[in-house]
Length: 126
Image (cartoon, rainbow, N blue to C red; front, side, top):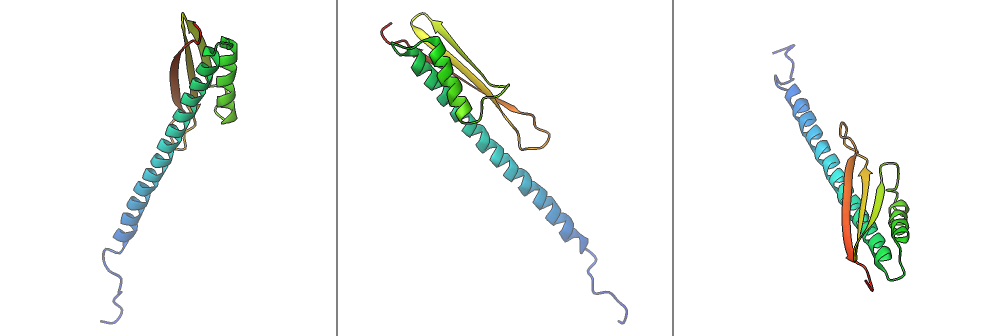
């Protein structure tokens, strides 16, 4: 059969299948990285709130030193910006620290994700 092409009828199907698999795998990789960033940011915010509560609840500590310690912990790890906040409140014999920050998204069409933590500690000597 002279002049007949050796190309198979469904040759374009492989490219379409590859594209579908590639896009799916790419979405899974971006999702996994984003989840990892969220867990990392959550641990940072919890550690910052914990540090602030420790400083504020110490016998020589004040609410201001607790807030500064929490803000230092957030800023040293790059999470203190306009969307971050630290609130330190004295509740009788307890100190409550609320810390929050936003995590930038690497996934297209997903806005920044807020991460929050609250730590309550009993004030020493109180």
